[in-house]
Length: 303
Ligand code: HMG
Ligand code: MG
Image 1 (cartoon, rainbow, N blue to C red):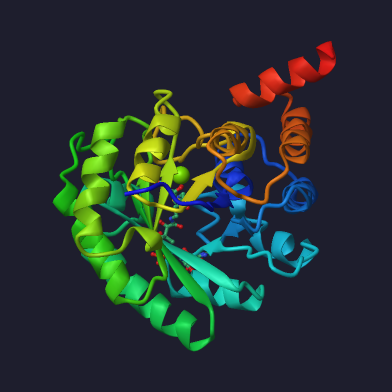
Image 2: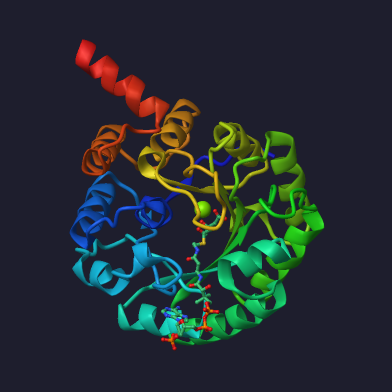
């Protein structure tokens, strides 16, 4: 299959990135980051998560963040929702899109959401029904599709089962996530090919953590399968509190460098994106994880 001519980048830095910070990031900084990202041309920005503040205190300011965003026409601000209570928060915050998040293994499902895969799917079915009735869009993420910190190997069939269930309940897009970042290009292709027997590539997305430096290769493999949507995190921020040792998502700047080089349209401006990454790295007091951002910034200085 030919790679898509256009790609939708889903920026997950403000959520996946900042959920993993040990020192709380003020809501005003999160909002400023979101504004800079939308000014860089990103059209989908995962803004926060309506999860339990006891489980992930970093997202406890969800309502404050949603209320302060200067919403730009044409931009979507999806929020994570694990259950009915989360959906209530998302609705009160006037979210237009919610993300339910399941897992391909029982242990990860328990560690991340305190329930079995089947219990999680039953909750998501309820959330989907209600969200769709309110006119919201629902996306479905599946964690540990290419390896699990607790169960190691994950069979493509386990991913297919969850993907089909999310599809049946009305998720418009299903995200295949490599939470640990252990996946390689061949494995990415095998899982996608198994899922694509049931759900077209156009409705799939890739979410690759870059722990082993394989995310760009995995994205390339997914592009060759025709997958048109990728999650990424500015400056490569983040990780998952329930996948110890996993680093952040692939850096948005690195993905954009790949896509620009392939002549694939995204609508994102590299200069403004790098500046957004420099802003958040400055606040966090830490260098970027993006190799493209580092190289391009050095080139600018030398010129
Ligand atoms: P639980 O403790 O089993 O929940 O947690 P519960 O239903 O038994 O309720 C216990 C208390 O939590 C109650 O309050 C509820 O009201 C409250 P109390 O009566 O004790 O005062 N509660 C909530 N509060 C706020 N918002 C809610 C909510 N739900 C219950 N939505 C639960 C179950 C699912 C809530 C918990 O496990 C949880 O919040 N987990 C989320 C963990 C998380 O956010 N992980 C990171 C995001 S996923 C990720 O990063 C992966 C991804 O990037 C893809 C990839 O890379 O793999 C998406
Ligand atoms: Mg993630």
